[in-house]
Length: 190
Length: 101
Image (cartoon, chains in turn red, orange):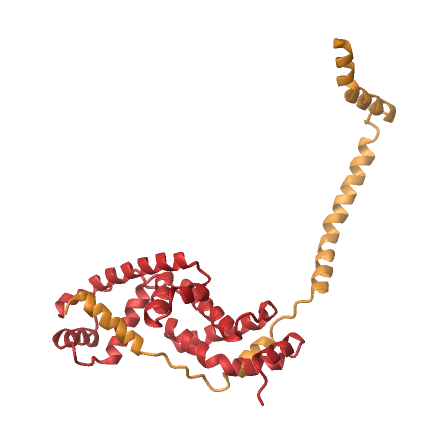
């Protein structure tokens, strides 16, 4: 029978470093999926995930077991991703007016027939570019609220922000999104 | 289709695109190697190091203080005079109030 999270954590806190490895194996797919929402390059994703687990190891003594270990770890993952976004605010001021051929085609097809399933790759690329132009706060809140479909309460817990702050940031983020969307000039394609 | 609807469709597309949870081969080994390489924080070592670092500034401060005491001793007022001045300063309020009565 596999040891539980609590048993593994207790062993690590007693000084057995190797007991941390099963925890890494158990939770790394979820942390990778989270990191891939915020970083595009695979080497950046790997760096984020590594940072999450190193931080988790260093702060393990502060884990109070009031919530499952997974929740504690995911909070750390989201905050690490947010720090990553703040460190890599490159190219945000670039004009968003130019769309690639695929993206323009995707919009045209979407405008022509609303019931067709658009090219997922072009849509993904377009959303990715839109999100990259948002500020770190806005990107985090849009990703968690709109894309991952989480509640305000959950977002507050994950980010460490108050519920009011989450709502304020969500409002600003949506305004930023609309502004970027207007820059894209979708009426040209519809 | 209006822009709001288009925006909604875009978000739906993003929602449908779940990021992969694929893990590179033996990634946990890399994490464990990184953890093993972390410097061990020893509180006693930190304490001892800061004590050693403080040695020279403290020694300099002691020498300066000793020199100052030594060279200013001759110019200082005698101890009796200092005591008298102190007593006068403390009792000046009492003396003034007794004059008023």
